[in-house]
Picture 1 (cartoon, helix red, strand yellow):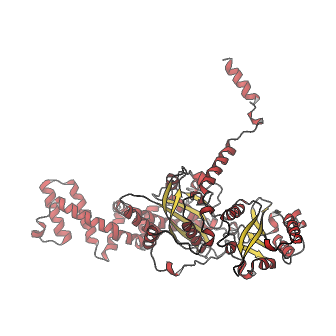
Picture 2 (picture 1 turned 180 degrees about the horizontal axis):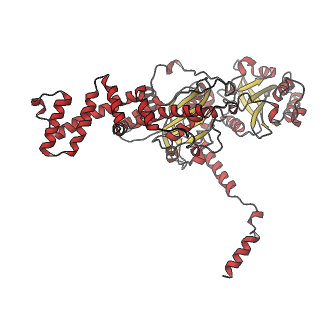
Picture 3 (picture 1 turned 180 degrees about the vertical axis):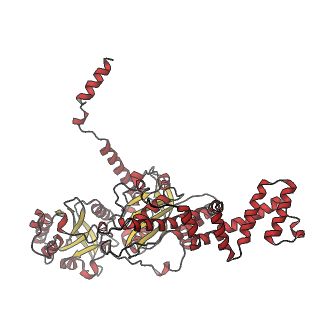
Length: 563
């Protein structure tokens, strides 16, 4: 441990920094757990034999899991909050927390968390030391203090290769462009589903699009309705008897009416009938067409040249490095989502804390937070005292399992106002099974009369959000494989059913022992405001020496005074 503290790698172990640390603590009676902070989930990467002695959990069950399984009914929420924040902000911490052994026995855990940074300043590991408080002897306490003092806080960057490193994967510009174009096709379709009536009318102004939609409708014998609507639009340029006569001809030609039946059809009646046909086409046939591959040639025609893929890079968190193998997807998503009429965010699941690296304009309008305030943070800052613990538990549970989330939750705007948020989250895996992103869609539930219509549009939007993105490699250094874990109750339901269920009842979190109290997140909103205030103070602070006016300034001002 002393050698590791000095920044050298001892001969013990496998020649790596981590191997030496394991060799140092493997056989000691103290419980030690190592967490790799570059791997999402804050799961135990390795633990020693002492861990089983204290907790009752063998290595096979402890490694690869988050230590929340030690929490239970009497675990103190405020202490857990301290632990979470220490892990999040890489702070050293020693606390006593009520935990539970594998057989259910309650014990006081004398726990310490020690962060380790590499020589580049990256937060690499968290070292946890656990001790059974009620059974501590004086000799154990002394040894425990010595162990915690000797734990390393720094390490050479090259002494331990990262288990997963996205930078190791490179793809060429042609592959990025292909991914970008494929994504743009999907997102263009997504846009059309938000306002189908306006989108269809705009598209039908393109002769090529009209011809392709007409061909698609022929399969279901609906093409005559499109022809009737298109022909009826020309009636707007006619008046009086001329308009009525043209209307009757349309009824005979497109609706199969005989002259007698068409006799009672005036221009206004035909326009009304055409509008009814149009609404049916826009809300039924058009969405079907958009979901099919038959519409792809129209999208290609509209997209044109897509050789420049990063034109939307300025909308992304400035500190975020877009993964090379997902650049086409990210830039296309951001370009489309920025002006989308719904709150949309994008989080990277490979970064501890899962920060949002993109929020769109509607998010900033709804929440009151500017892009530079929200991006780079987990969206927990929207939580506050009235946020439902069960809803937070559902969010965490579905994120861990990598499945869709639909939950109604009370959130807070920057000004402190609460609002009802129907939150939907879509996990995005790559074609190798690596959990890469999470798309969040926030829908403000209010008393508006068009709530049902808005919910239907939301359902259509969610159906088209991608759950998998194809990557042009099979490199296993990008991240760990992750298998979606659907519960039996989640299988066989569509988006509209999930949304209706989330609207009707409060989430159930009876199995989430660590989320029963709101203390865990009651002050997230206030903490966010404090952090923003501190950020402003830091940005506007001027040191004493900098307040002194430079000689150049004094000289120029004196000359200006003289005229």
